[in-house]
Image (cartoon, rainbow, N blue to C red; front, top):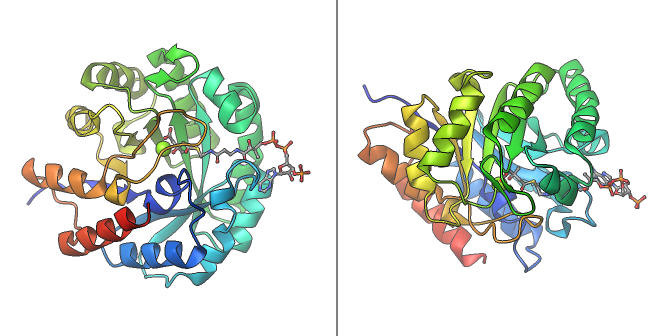
Length: 282
Ligand code: HMG
Ligand code: MG
């Protein structure tokens, strides 16, 4: 039997957060509902960040209230601090994610604090989540390159990933935020991280700005990573990472994985329909 690789759908959050047009909640809800039928176990649908920083995500509670929840799907939300966590719980997010960076420049630009300060802010979020038995995922951004600081030392990625795991994150998603990584830099980064965090606790989150995301996924598969983040229609980017244009497209990853002989459990016809919907939202 083909080995399973999980794709975590990022379209409604990482995909839409950077769109210039303020997308109405109904359109976001329609996209999430289309994605719910595809077969994903996890869909990131909202982020409870400052609405002044990311106006596109201000309607997260409305989106979570409006979707038709499918059994077996975890609807995830980003939570940068306790205030975000409380908003996510009020909106009934199934799980949350904290998001740090391996580079100081991006940490400042994205969440307005140093890496060390961010870890201090995340700890009470994880503590509160654990009390309520809510799972917490951790992101590390700029795992190979930073738009402000240049190349990221692999050891720094390993240090932040380990700190998030030790704090209680069940999985660490490694973000090539500006899509500048290639199989060489991704491999060097993963080798450092794998010395601290086992492969079954890692996910690859590769943006496709440089056109290498599929190759980076293949390199990561070779090192044992079996979870990848992707966004339908290749939507997305990060508002605080200039040039971070698209997440790798879920349909392209699913096709490459099928070619390589892996099973994703996704309904490819429904995935294509959701991708068409996503592309029309731009
Ligand atoms: P700050 O200004 O330093 O925070 O922002 P603060 O605590 O001083 O609060 C300032 C104001 O924001 C206050 O309101 C707070 O109440 C409010 P005021 O008194 O001025 O009216 N506030 C909030 N409001 C709603 N929800 C909250 C919240 N927190 C504070 N949770 C903060 C710090 C982290 C809040 C801000 O920098 C922020 O929101 N940043 C988010 C940036 C973001 O969302 N980036 C995109 C997601 S990350 C990403 O895409 C990368 C990823 O995909 C992986 C990869 O690709 O690498 C995950
Ligand atoms: Mg991202």
